[in-house]
Each structure stands twice: as structure tokens, then as C-alpha cells.
Amino acid sequence: MRVARVDLSKKAIKVSEISKEFAVYIRGFTRVYPPGYDPRGLYGMALAYATSQRGACHMRSCAYRPNLAGALDRFSTKGQAELVKEREDFYCVVDSLVYCRFLCLPIIGMNWGDISKLLKIVTGRDYPAQKLKEIGEKIHNLTRKFNEREGVMDDELPEIFFRYPIKIYDKDVIVREEDFKRMLNEYYRLRGW
Image 1 (spheres, rainbow, N blue to C red):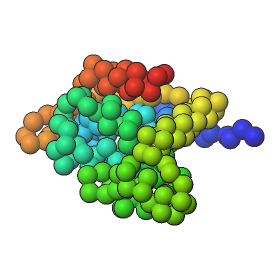
Image 2 (tube, rainbow, N blue to C red; image 1 turned 180 degrees about the vertical axis):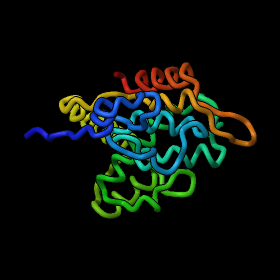
Image 3 (cartoon, rainbow, N blue to C red; image 1 turned 30 degrees about the horizontal axis):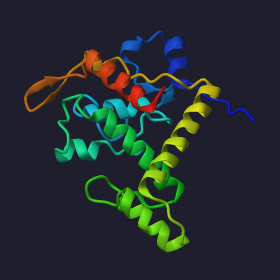
Image 4 (tube, rainbow, N blue to C red; image 1 turned 120 degrees about the vertical axis):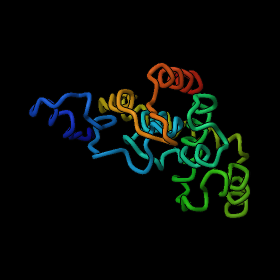
């Protein structure tokens, strides 16, 4: 069974002739603005929004937490692709187990080892952390294949984030396109795509 995809943002742009430069949507899914965090202030979220399988979603990777906590430099590309991939895989497992996200937030919540231990307690079966990582990656890749089948494949960030700065600490900040492309290419390499 195929799922019909309503692409309101793209249709609205065609009908009203609004410049794509000002449109804010990811994967064609309508949002007034990506939820939670402006990607110009968090490079991890710039990548996470573009690669999230359901459009701009801050919960698919929760990359904002390590960026805001200082675990990674939020204005740098360094380590962001690894963070986003690992967190996406982690939350594929977390969501499959129907764990509460507040128990599994990066830095303060459960990690792969904790989930492995809980599964052993509940099921009596061993699920080593490495096996759980492989399962998470398979789930993520399956959602990607579903999106490919449905034609929802633009791993892009709206142009507005590359062109129009916001003020952070009295400094004008944008996502530099070359930085975004570097992170995206590194992400693809890590995923084997």
C-alpha cells in the first residue's frame, strides 16, 4: 500500500510564486519553522533536521543537547555527523522499545549500555550494545528506504538558513553551505550511502 504525501509547502510556493529563498520546509513537510532549535545556532541540528526521516524534527536525534551542553562546539562541523548518526540509531531503538525520551536524553539519560542491561533484566536475553547499534542502524535504513519509495528524499536545509543571519552573542550567524555539505557528506560516508 502506498501512502499519499501531501506537499503543501511546495504547492503553496508554486501557486503564490513565493520565492523558495523564504520557504521553510524539509522533505516537503509543512512546518512554519523547524521546531525547537534554530539550525543557525546549532550545527548538529542543521544536519539533524535535514536527515530526519520525518522532516524537521528535533526529537529524531536530540542533537541539540550535546551541542548546547558543550560536548561539541555548536558552531563547528567537527563531530556533528557522528553525533547525529549515533543518536538517530539510538532513538530508533529507544522508540522501538517505547521508552520515554526523558529517560534517554543525551548526556543525562540512559545510553546503549543501560538499554542493554534493561533488556537483559526484562527478557533474559543478551542484547550487547553493539548488537543494539546494528539494530538501530537497520531500522533507520528501513525508514530511509520507505521514504525513497514514497519520493521523500531531499536531505536539504531551507535556503533561508544559509542566507539570512540571526544574532547570537551580538554576532551574525548563518549555516555556511560548504560546512553543511561537508557534514552531510560525512554523514553519508558513515551511513554507507
